[in-house]
Length: 207
Image (cartoon, rainbow, N blue to C red):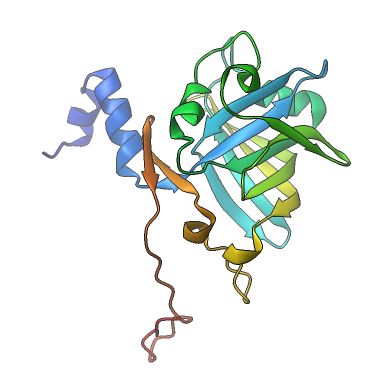
């Protein structure tokens, strides 16, 4: 199948959403942990997390237009903290369940358990192998569709020793992290290739 821009815009809404969300490829899969000003915990699955820079260490998270029942961005604004926790194999169903609009904390209705570390007021997911705590830096409103791109600074990072290479590379296959695709797709990671730094006259070699 192929579509022109006009044909894409004319597709049925949910078909178009699934198509455009999935053709971008596999993405990072994280559970975002937050807490509101009254201490109520929230957990939500996110695939729109990207690397922004390492100096200083920053990530970017895309939030859909905020409507009633969506708490993550409001909690971040209220407390200035949140966590990102990689999802492990066997946890995909519960991770997806967090996308429902619960009236109670997702920690209460899924198999995930909150865990707190000193000086970090946002909840981590206990047992997650790759996780980090972040603070917001700046919000950018994307006027074309009402989404919000949040720049956030990494204040704490945790990677298991067995998944950390000597050069600092985090081997997420060894860590058991899952990937996400589309709005409801979850995939296991299998195999990993790395290559030396690419130069015009020197073909990269496997590491």
